[in-house]
Image (cartoon, rainbow, N blue to C red; front, side):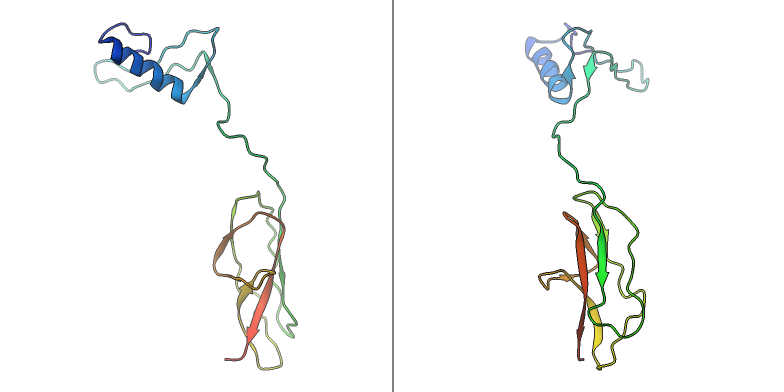
Length: 138
């Protein structure tokens, strides 16, 4: 069965054409047929004549960084994220991997963004980001 198959009703043929057009941009200068296997054979698609174009082009910023700031830590080391991210990527927060401490009795409770919003275990990155250690008395 193909998009250009004449078998079946006119409504069925129209549905085939609409289905093919909704998934592919067809090259007007090439044969446009979709094939399925016969007698239980595996289904295949003939891709000659199809133009591949992204459906939603997006400008992607590459090389976004996550920096950790210990916020007046007196011991341990601040985590370093060596990765570069694309906008929209999911970032895993590194936690207190360097065993940060403070001498004033406050304990590390997690990381916050520049607005003081806690960053739990992951977040979506959209720009270069600095996370700040959040300290408090317990």
